[in-house]
Image (cartoon, rainbow, N blue to C red; front, top):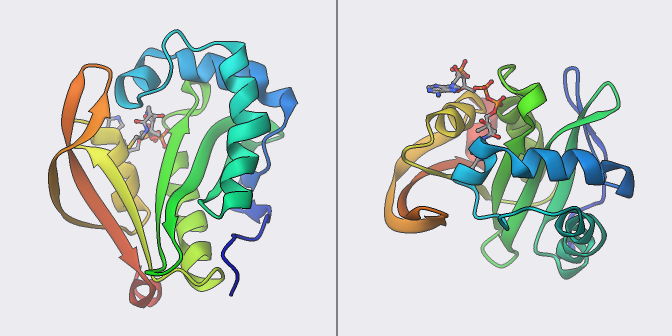
Length: 184
Ligand SMILES: CC(C)(COP(=O)(O)OP(=O)(O)OC[C@H]1O[C@@H](n2cnc3c(N)ncnc32)[C@H](O)[C@@H]1OP(=O)(O)O)[C@@H](O)C(=O)NCCC(=O)NCCS
């Protein structure tokens, strides 16, 4: 077992989790400027094309090579519809965290939950992880519904554990462990 995730393209039902490239700059910029994305993620504001380029060219590859995680684009019919990643990976405890956003033009089809199930289950079954978590602001109802639909169990609240542009927020912790794979 290495301390890097395999750089794989994963297939879901009607979508793929693939590698970001510079052709995604415009879509990433536009999705990260969206009001709902900005409400729940502490992204640069204003979000520039340069921020998207640096995320695609430097941050995402750096997360892979350092072992911190793996960034995938959620792709439907060839178009970027969101981004999902594994991050903050601890190879000693074998725990990692999933984060995501879905582009405004692709919301309402449960993509975040479906992608989280594919990526989380792969991390547990193929990549040696023992536990995967999703942490959502308690006010972020859509994200919590996505985590539940992916078979993650709501474990509790970490108080004042997150930061969004409007201030500190409580985070609901959702977890999936290796033993859950059979039952979810
Ligand atoms: C969270 C997010 C990724 C969900 O996108 P999505 O996969 O398209 O989600 P959907 O719109 O299909 O909704 C998923 C679920 O939430 C529910 N939902 C959506 N909006 C809701 C709302 N405002 N209030 C209550 N429930 C809501 C849906 O009914 C659905 O429930 P179901 O799975 O039980 O049917 C998307 O809203 C987003 O990108 N938000 C901004 C970034 C973000 O919040 N990232 C997560 C940070 S933890």
